[in-house]
Image 1 (cartoon, rainbow, N blue to C red):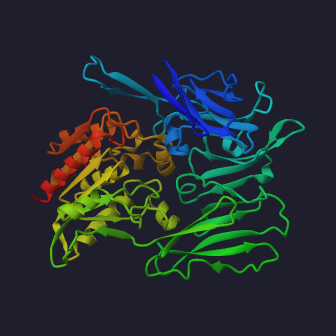
Image 2: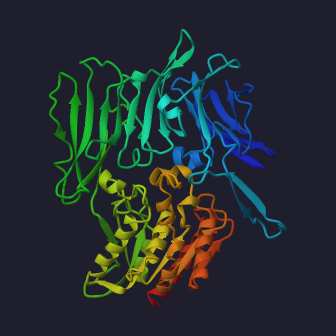
Image 3: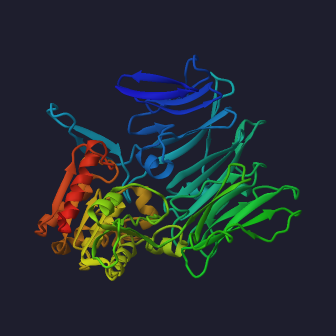
Amino acid sequence: MMFGEMQLSKTVIVIRCKRSRIYSNSDFYHNVLQAYVWNNNVYIKASPTAEPVQITENGVENKIFNGIPDWVYEEEMFGTHSALWWSPNGNFVAYAAFNDTEVPVIEYSFYSEDTLQYPKTIRIPYPKAGAKNPTVQLFIVDTKLLPHFRSAEISPPAEIKSGDHYLSVVTWVTDERICLQWLRRIQNFSVLTVCDFESATENWSCPQEKQHTEESTTGWIGRFQPSVPHFAPDNATYYKVFSNTVGYKHIHYINGSQVSNKELHVLLFALPFPPHPGCSTYYCRKMGSNHPNSPKCVSCDLNQERCQYYSVSFSKDAQYYQLDCHDLWYQMILPPHFDLSKKYPLLLDVYAGPCSQKVDYSFRISWATYLASTEQIIVASFDGRGSGYQGDEILHAINRRLGTYEVEDQIAAARTFSEMGFVDKDRIAIWGWSYGGYVTSMVLGSGSGVFKCGIAVAPVSRWQYYDSIYTERYMGLPIASDNLKNYNSSTVMARAEKFKEVEYLLIHGTADDNVHFQQAAQISKALVDAEVDFQAMWYTDKDHAIAGQAHKHIYTHMSHFIKQCFSLP
């Protein structure tokens, strides 16, 4: 039995459906209109007591998704269970439809209670790198005359529609204007379209002159995808973050239509703060003929000894901005009563995925806090090539070659740390989860001689095993005419022989729908074939997060492993 919750003002309505799945976008217009998805079909209710109006009829489990994303769109593009978007006044609702009919299916066992004689088999359409992708359509439904309605499809522009593509961002501007962003499968080219409802014809028009194109010649679009546009009060001009000609992310002002000289707009942009490429300052420029066009620095007067890297975000109407700052290239969590004359073991905490950032000023209590405070272990992190917020030259250094520079830089950082007088160079370890587990495994398999041991949790082991949207964004296609060579040279299994030189703990959940258990299974197989002695732990029926009671267990188990590696009591 599945349960779905839909919230109406402060009242929660619980809907129970046998052998059915119901999803709600939990978005009501004035607590009256409601759109929801049931059995992969979209329904709209004109009021809480009205009969639902079925908008789509072709929904099929694991094949046709209406108003909800399939697995890969939810994970890599939308980051939400919903693919429904209400217009500001509730006259229209947009929804995306996904066809996964030709998408390959991943299957894994779910063991459930010990009284279950045969395990369940979970099946999920999951496009891996180079595999058939879902197709996507965007529809807008006119809800003004419910139970009668009109549904119109908005097609992508020709330069997108001609090949495999994605719908990446949906933004309502007004009740009769919507902004869509489309992306080619090879994610270095995107087109933003602005579409208007024409009352006379009751059609949607997306004129070419309102399109905005982004293209990257060094990597991919945006941090992970095109940035969301922030429209100004005129509902025509907007602000958008993308790289300038020298490869730094800036806030750009885009004049989408003719704008009166009397209107005022503010532009914020970043300039690198010499001599550190990881630093930046932000400037403010007022747009309009009645204001001087010289920029004003809004971060120069702040304490530069404390912060050298700043980021800015606009408020909804672009009248205010929020200024944040970041500082160092690496960070260390030191034990209490730290003594420079002593030698401490060091654990390198790594993620190192594209556009990631481990080094920041965010306060957090974590496993690293415990290790430093209780076990007297230094925990360090380092942001190398491929990490974010340092310009496209660093970000795109790993474009089409994952498993190279981001791995080499972690080794180089550990070597630097080992030369610090308070670090015991014979007791250096590394650990990571997900992409961090991949980098950990690649580092340990490098034969660098720097690390004594390491832990990889839910690691990728071969990029052909991972999903298409994420992997192809950074690696292209695994075919001979594109980037197959680098796919094949970036596997953990190819380094199995070198694991004889280190102590290795491999951990994975058997029900991981993201990084499949297949990834760890192939590492284990390669290590066994190479006669490598290693440790492994699996978590039955646990997904990528390894949550619940297993969460406590995994950190206890990893703590024991690290303490044993460092010969701690």
